[in-house]
Structures are given as C-alpha cells and as structure tokens.
Amino acid sequence: QVQLEESGGGLVQTGGSLRLSCVVSERASGRAMNRYSMAWFRQAPRKEREFVAHIGWTRTDYTTTHYSNSVKDRFTISRDDTKKTVYLQLDSLKPEDTAVYYCAARPAFSGSSYENEYPYWGQGTQVTVSS
Image 1 (cartoon, rainbow, N blue to C red):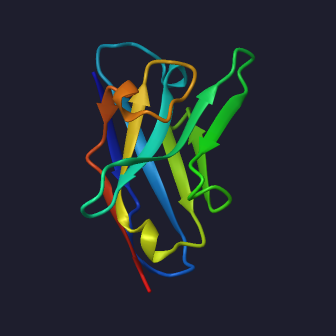
Image 2: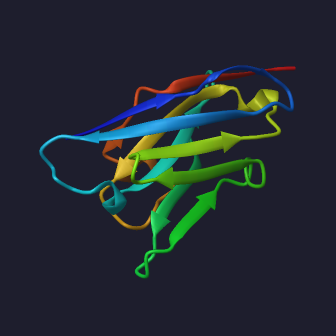
C-alpha cells in the first residue's frame, strides 16, 4: 500500500510563491519510489479536479515532465527519490490558482494527465492566492 502526504500549502498574495511537498511511504509493496510516476492535480471550489503536472522516467532513466497550459512556465515539478518526495514549486501565483492541490502516484514509468490512471492519492493541501 502506498500512502501520500502533502504539505506546504497556505495563503499567499498574487505574484507570490509556495513549494508543495509530497512524501511517499510504502508498505508491503516493496516497489522502489523510482518505479512510480508522480503527479499533481488541483480542485478549485465548485470545479472538477484538473491536472497540473506530472513527472516520470524514460527508458534511459531521464526524468520527463509535463504541465498543463495554465501553469506552464510558472510551476515546476521535481522529485528526490532518496527522500521519497515530489515537489511542486508554484511561482507567479494568481487568484485562479486557488485550489486544493493533490499528489498522486501510479506504478508506471511514464506520467499521465488522467486522474483515473492514478490509484494512489494524498489528502490534499490548500493553496489560497489573495488578490
């Protein structure tokens, strides 16, 4: 069983920055963290959950990343497998970035933008951007 725990959310003004963290803990599966692709999704009030970014691996062990158009060039996803942690750096924040941000994991090398392809989810961390 894989458990994910997010942290780092908070209240920030427009143009500010936050760094979200997601710690991965595993029980019984024995699967190393670097065999999971990781993603961040978010859900704003009264809206459906949407893809933000994912990070995975190529066959030659290079990391690959992908972002939604709404956050590209402002957010950066990264991972530190030695710490079993994935990060999301949020810069140039806008009020429309206000949402609960969720970390997700799937047992595959490549990432995905589709939430139904991720079996493991954290509880979420709130990000609020004031205007």
